[in-house]
Image (cartoon, rainbow, N blue to C red):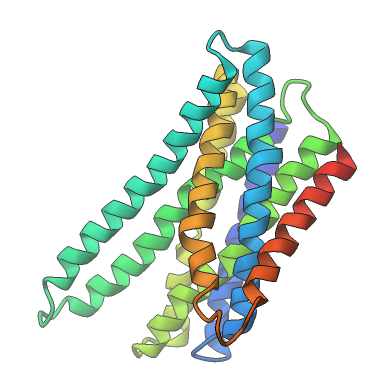
Amino acid sequence: MNESIIMALIATLGTWSVTALGAGMVAFFKSPNPKLLNLMLGFAAGVMIAASFWSLLQPAIERAEQSSFVPAYAVVTMGFLCGAFFMWGSDKIVTWAQKRADSTQGEPNERLNRIIMLVLSITLHNIPEGMAIGVAFGTLQRGNYSTENLMGAITIAVGIGLQNFPEGAAVSLPLRREGYSRKKSFLLGQASGLVEPVAGVIGVALVVYVEAILPYALAFAAGAMILVAVHELIPECQKNQKAQSYCATMGIVTGFAVMMLLDVMLG
């Protein structure tokens, strides 16, 4: 098996384990520390925004200039928008399904519908995140291995892993509050992250065996990550801004600075 695929599989298994760790918080309490979660979400958003450029868009531009017959700016723009629209479409599907579930209020399956929609929402968001990790590790194949590329891929996995922790808790804790057992709440919470290893292997395999797709795939992953960071992570971590002034904001700044520092040092 290709080394890039093995590394991507290990990395995505790691991000899934962080989801499971977040889901495991249900064993200790029914509600998380909002200040800590906001800080983690902000840090993850900063890492993902910085990684989207230095570890995904910049390499996509360079590779498109070297190997693509299409202008690099067109390749990167197309891939970036496709990634963002993919996430937007996923969100619309979930919203539509939730509205249908809400229309069944008062029926016996109301509680089950809420649970399915909650797990489905997190699961859909994990697909492009897993692909982003796979694409990042796919850049290491065919003589493209370098410390800079390796650290960039690892940093992307770490950033996604950090934001997976509150996602796991976001599934398991509400289930626990609705009366589900700790065991069942944990199992459903960690299951939302199982799709990441599958998506990661698919992402890296596409890059490894279809090299021409690499610039598009890198930009696609960047678009998906930017949309997740801007549309979900940043608004979520800023919910209690008045009570916790600048806590989440400093998390974003710190996450961005850490990612920037790593890339500059390795560049």
